[in-house]
Image (cartoon, rainbow over all chains, first blue to last red; front, side, top):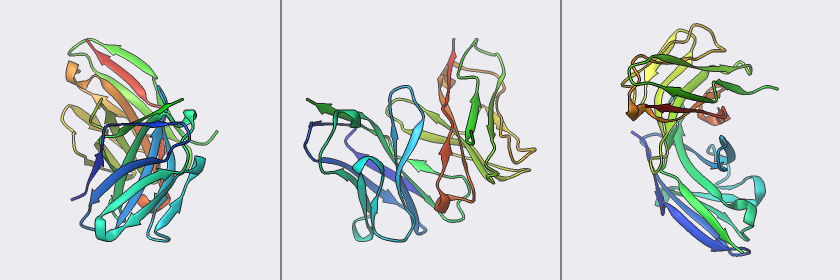
Length: 114
Length: 113
């Protein structure tokens, strides 16, 4: 069975500050991990994915995430927040041979203060 | 443009009515799936398919039916709509599973009154 926990349903940062969104996962098979972003009234856009290559994954818009197997974590970071980063972020897990089963966390809403 | 197309974008149903949410992709993806999004609960998997003629249940399948007669289409049917099915529904597709990532449609916002 697989599951994802995102710590913090709301995170608020100042413009220019570090963004850290936390994600922990549970998986009985080697995981593939994803971060998606959803802007208001839009669909989901893939930020980055981990598929068992490099543990530090770089994505779009300056975001990156590090896979830490010992901590079962895949936290999302960005060195300097921009107003346009305000959105909801979802962490998700799947596994090879898991078909279309992508399991999502509850989501974290990121607010960016000027 | 290549991608996942969902129709309709908005729909209001009365309790007990039935309807079909359409999902089509033109990327020759084998894997397709349906999710519902509710506030504070993320996205939950309803049904998924690993190829034409093959479907399986996800986390919240009750009240929904699917079929996969072609690679391109994966419709979601609500047999008798209930207010608890008020949600935003997303369809996703993937070439061959997690390694290749998933492409999402723009969603269908359904309200059941």
